[in-house]
Every structure is written in structure tokens, then in C-alpha cells.
Image 1 (cartoon, one colour):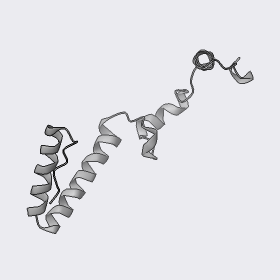
Image 2 (tube, helix red, strand yellow; image 1 turned 90 degrees about the horizontal axis):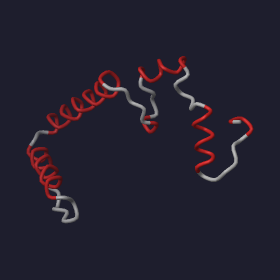
Image 3 (cartoon, one colour; image 1 turned 90 degrees about the vertical axis):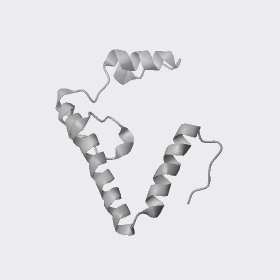
Image 4 (tube, helix red, strand yellow; image 1 turned 180 degrees about the vertical axis):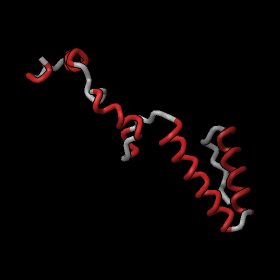
Length: 96
């Protein structure tokens, strides 16, 4: 069982402890089935129900990938200039 972490907000810690207690009582096969169900739900959410632009996922969402041919992956030249100017650097030759 987990030890209580006093630095975690009370509501969050209560939820974690609830899940930990339920998991500790479950059979290993039940825990494995629950993990598989959560993984499937996660995939459903990120691949079918939402438009995921999180670069840390390593796999591009099919909806986001479908937008690539439309040019949505590039920033407009004006945005590049604004970004370069904002940081005090000179615009690159490519963004001029």
C-alpha cells in the first residue's frame, strides 16, 4: 500500500489512495484487465475522439496528419518574423 504523501493536494491524494486500495484488493488478472481497458480507452480518446497535437506522443494523430497536405504544419511567414523579432534576434533569410 502507498504511504500518504503530505505534499500532494488532499483531493488528489484521496483519489490516488482510493485507487491504490482497490488495486491492492484485486486479483492480478483483474488488475491486468483494468490496465488493458484503460490503455484501450486512452487510444480511443487520443486517436478517435480528439484532435491531438501533443508532440510528445511520438505518433501523430491521424486527424492531425490529414491536415499536413493543407499546409497547417508550417507557421505563416508573418508568425516567424514576429517570433524572431520578439526575442530580439534578426529574421533569418528564409523568413524575410
